Image 1: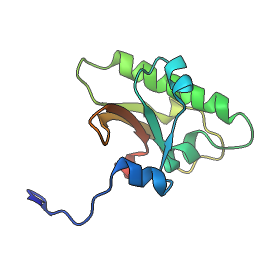
Image 2: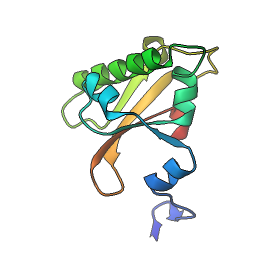
Image 3: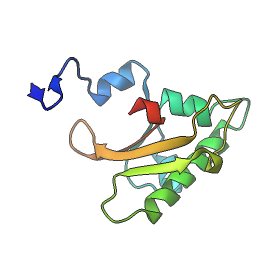
Image 4: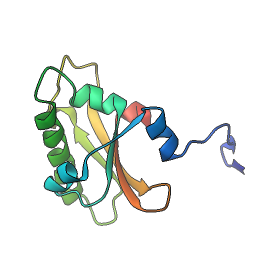
Length: 123
C-alpha cells in the first residue's frame, strides 16, 4: 500500500493500541457528563501529563473533558481537530512540557466516530 509519502511500514488498529496500553478508554458516563456524545479515549502520555498525580484524578479527568467539550462547542461546524491550551487544563504533577492537548474526531475501527485526546507529539 503506497501513497504520496511512500510505502506503509507499519499500521495498527485502535484495538492493538488498547491492548498495548497506549490508549485508555474514558468511561462513557464520565465523558457524557461533560457533554461528549461519542466514545472518548486518551493516550497514556496525555493522561500522564494532565490527569495522573496524587489524588483527585477523577476531578482532573472531568476538568479535561469539560475543557475539550468547550473547544468542540466553540469550533466551526465540521471541525475534527480541537486544540486546548495547557493553561485551561489541570495538571496532576510537575508539568513535563506539553503546552496543549489535541482532540481529534476520527473513525474508530468499525467506522464509528471516536474522540481521541493526545499530546501534540503523539499525532
